[in-house]
Image (cartoon, rainbow, N blue to C red; front, side, top):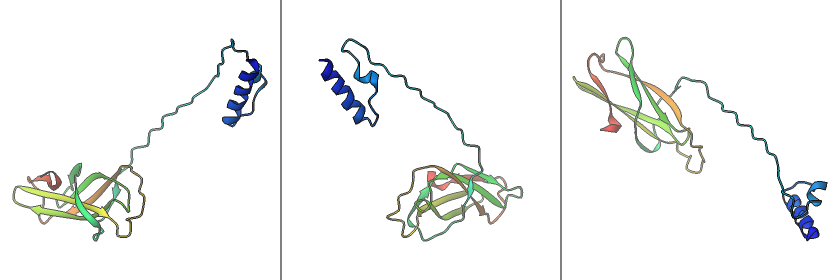
Length: 151
């Protein structure tokens, strides 16, 4: 019985890639087997960064509407800084921005697609905060800014 246990311990140690130890081969069936493991976990928090500035590239594959998070007008109200979450290029590329402006509201719709030729590219699934600036025909004033992808 001791020989069988010693042989099993030896095979187990070899199967795990570790060399057999003297204590592993000298165990009896009545001795408990124990190991001590230390685990070190350190949490790293990424520093707060500004969104990545993006310009529309156009000519993407299958452009679709993308929801945005915020729209901040400039001091003079002539531009809007749009912020949204997206994926990495070449799989998530800003194609174009659509603006519909009326006397009561400004509707901003973002369109993203993939770059041509990226069909066989594997992109990691990670969220990237992006921003783009759009120019208004007239200062924003009291008009409401609306996400066209939510309509």
